[in-house]
Length: 450
Ligand SMILES: Nc1nc2c(ncn2[C@@H]2O[C@H](COP(=O)(O)OP(=O)(O)OP(=O)(O)O)[C@@H](O)[C@H]2O)c(=O)[nH]1
Ligand SMILES: [Mg+2]
Image 1 (cartoon, rainbow, N blue to C red):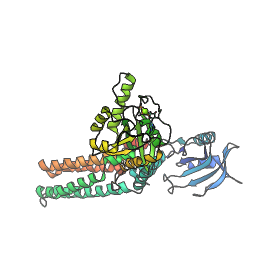
Image 2: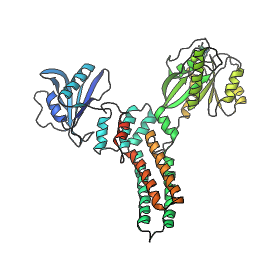
Image 3: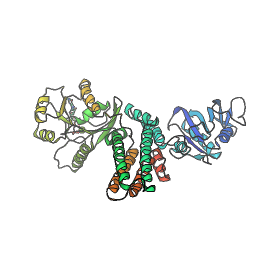
Image 4: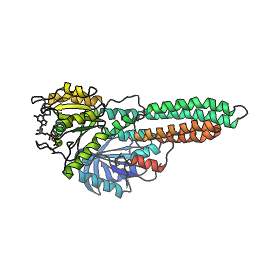
């Protein structure tokens, strides 16, 4: 338990109907009693727990705001400490003045994620669940939300604990072999250990999927590429439903990358409009073209846009031939008489899907959106979705592989060190094995007040 009391505005900055101040620690109740006065009386010496009270927050005798207040006495609270919450009106001045009052009464301004950090340190949730809280807050679509729910329900923790248990069994077997050499020979010990380690490696590898982690973390990255003037920026705007990028009839309008996000059937998609790919003397445009090429390399999905109202140019054909597999081709400007057909494209690249669209006709964009969405499918069998967890699993697997190599050349007792290292890596996920640095890294990504 911590000896100091922390406070923070828990609601987002800006105007809102309600703004919440949260206080956690041994002085939560005394601070509440000092600044809050229930209607028609004074705060009782011992505030009733988990009961919402109506009254005013006072700055001395002056009324600052009317509010609702609640005390949640330890251990039945978010942090397992005494927690007080004030629900004030959500104006900037009221909230910051009420915060000042809390600080004057002895609270300290909470660090980002410090409430959840306390919930973890006080044993209410494991580290993977603490991270799920932030995953939940930052979820920008159904897919990310579902992953957060699974983690909050302990999906990752349960998987990791089971793997850690299996590893303990292996370690115990190894210890028996080391401690009772007359009963278990080195060879027998090694024979028994090897299949168990191999099985564990397979299980751990099956639970992580880099693509899934990245999709959940960053959304599906889609690059719109093509020659100048084919309608890349127009398509970006039409897909996003906003005028994000400048559109003109002048080739070379877009110089820099323009990005926009959208949610397609619950999946976050990040679209990047790029400068038209062409040879140019203009140094600014040249840098733009280099950036386009980089965006193409980094994208999960590239869409080559062609101007369907013009015959296919040689440059287009070159781009088409170079396009990596699983890209899409969109023949744009289908509201005009078409000079390129999907069959022409299929004749050159039969492996690619080709869609005929018009940035000026919303209806034609639905099949394109469906194709983009289809690229973002992830398996819900993947237990470990957070990059930090995936990294720890990969390190655990590396240590287990070391253990197998050690068993090949050395005595079983030498493999014990590798198994311990693997156990430590797994422990980092649930927080069974943590140091301050790791906690700082995890909680610094939180917002203040959570
Ligand atoms: N008729 C018709 N015109 C379109 C369509 N899409 C784009 N245009 C026009 O084509 C011209 C170029 O459009 P942009 O969206 O700026 O093309 P871009 O590919 O971004 O061009 P750069 O930024 O120069 O590489 C503009 O005059 C658009 O209005 C379409 O579907 N139909
Ligand atoms: Mg453009």
